[in-house]
Image (cartoon, rainbow, N blue to C red; front, side):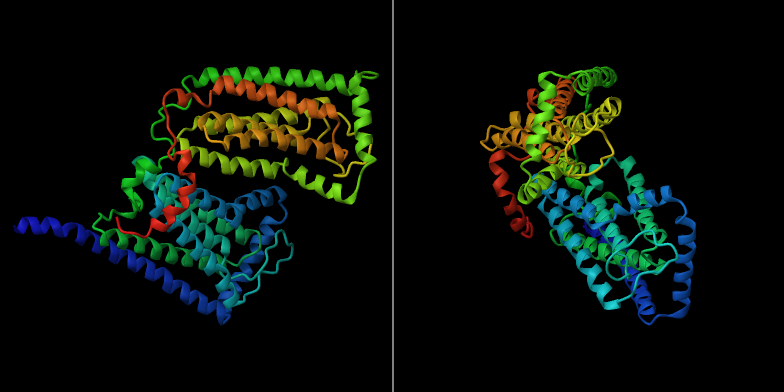
Length: 496
C-alpha cells in the first residue's frame, strides 16, 4: 500500500519540482524586466550612456555596408507583426482542422497578450528611439521595449512549445537552439539598424520570457487539474498530440523517385524556355505585317485612348493581384492549409515548384528576348524587366491553376467551382489591367499562357500532386465540417 502511494505521488512531486523551477525562472524574468523598466523610466545615466555608445558603434559598423543592411532588414522582418501574425493565424487554423482546439486557444491567448503588452508599455515609458549619424532604417512609435524582440520571443516560443511533440526526439534540441538563435538575431538586428537601444531589446526578451512562462505554466496547471501527466517543456505542451499535429505523419516519401523527377524537371525547364524564347523572338522581331503585329499595335492604342481616372485606379488594383507580394501571400496561406487538411507534402511541393519555375522561366526568357514595352504611355513607368512574357499574368495563372488542380479533385462540394472561376477570372483581370496600363502587348499575354500551360503540365505529370487520392487518403476535416470550425473555439475551455 505504501509503495502504491509512493508511485501515485511521483507525478505530483515531479510537477511540483518543475513548477518551482519554472516559477523561479518566470519570476526572475519578471523582476529583471521591472528593474530595467524602472532604470529606463528614471533615465539612469550609466544605462543611457551605454545605450547611446552601443547605438553609435553599431551605426558606424553597419551603415557603410549596403549589402549587410539588406540582410539585416530581411532578418528583422521575421520578427515583424505581419510575419508573426501570419504564422500564428495559420497555426491556429491548422490546429482547429486537426481537432486541437486547446492548443489553438493557447496560441491565441499568448499571441494576443504579446500584442497588448507591446504598445501599452511603449506608451507608458514614452522613450524616444535612437538618433544616429547615418540613419539606415526607421520605425514608428516609441522605443521601450522592442516589439520585435518581445513578439518574436512570444510567437516563436509558443509555436515551438505547441509543435515540439510533432518532431522526432533527435530534432527537438536543435529546434530549440534554432529558435533561440533566430530570436537573438532578430533582436540584434533592431540594435544594428539603429531603431532600438540595447536595453530595449533586453526588455523585450525579458518580458517575452515572463509572458511565455506564465501562459505555459497556466496550460500545465490546466492539464494537472484534469488529471493529465505534466511532462517537461522539452517535450512540448501536449506530447500526446504529436501524431495529430505532425504535418504528414503517413507520408514516408514525398516522391518515389526524386532523382529521376529532378532530371525530368530540369530537361523540361530547358524545353519550356526554348519554346518561350522561340515564340518571344518571333513576335518581338520577326512578325512584321502579320496578325500578331497588328494585334500588338492596335490593342495597346485602343486601351490608351480610353484611359479614365476611374479605370486607371481599378487597373492599378487588378495589377496588384498579380504582383509578387500578392502571389506570395496566396501561396503562404494555401500551402499550410492544404498540408493541414490532407497531410501530404506533395501538393505543397507542386505549388512551390510551380511558383519557382514560373519565376525562373519568366526572368530567363525576359532577359533573353529583351522586348521593349508597348509604344504607348506606360502607366507603371520604367520596369526592371522587359515586356515578354508578362510576369504578373504568368504568376497569376500558375498559382490559381495549381490550386485548382489540387482542390477540384479532392472534394465534390459545390464551392470547388469557385476555384475554377478564380483560375479564369483572376488571369483575365490581371491581363486586361496590364494591357490597359500600357505595360504589355497581347502576345506577352500569350507568352504567359504558353509558359503556364507547359510548366504546370510538366509538373503535374512529374510530381503527380493528387497521387495520394488513389491511395485512399482522406482529409483531416470533411468538406461538410468546414462551417463547424468556429465551434471548436467555443468547446475549447470545456473539460474533457
